[in-house]
Image (cartoon, rainbow over all chains, first blue to last red; front, side, top):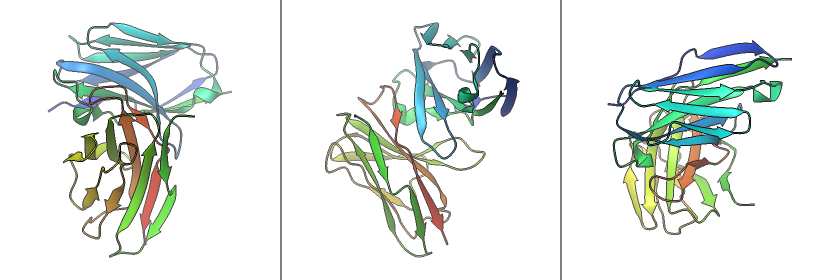
Length: 115
Length: 112
């Protein structure tokens, strides 16, 4: 059974710092990996989706990398801002079919960016 | 604007009552999903539908029911058989069974 771990559960950094959020998974046979952002009391917003054949994806100040062989993904946030404060979740699709019905979510990392 | 609309945002229910949460999408997505989110836990899949008029149980379907009579709508009924219904419920959709997931804003159900 796929397990997704995000450590630490919470992180506090000063504004302007570049930071890395980690996501690890136990089964390397994945179809894709998605990173989401969740603000308190809100739904999830898709940030980046990396297919298993890709190594990284970029969107603005965000860069996500994927290393299937080591079972890890990182979300890099450049020049962090207070508006980046949120919970960041990663989700890994199961097996070779890539069905969303087999997605496994991590518990998320709650990021606080101090002004 | 295209998106997923969940209603109501907040809902209170007495024990023994059934409640229905609405989920509507105008993204023309084939697949829709219902998740439950509890503090300290990852999202758990309740039901999913890969195409209209078809749906499947997820990991925690007991005490829940759904229908998919229209492509844009996927309502979730929380029945009195659900032992711990108080939670944050999230509806999502994707263009197909493996596409990028898009979520609604969520519905918070509290059982009094």
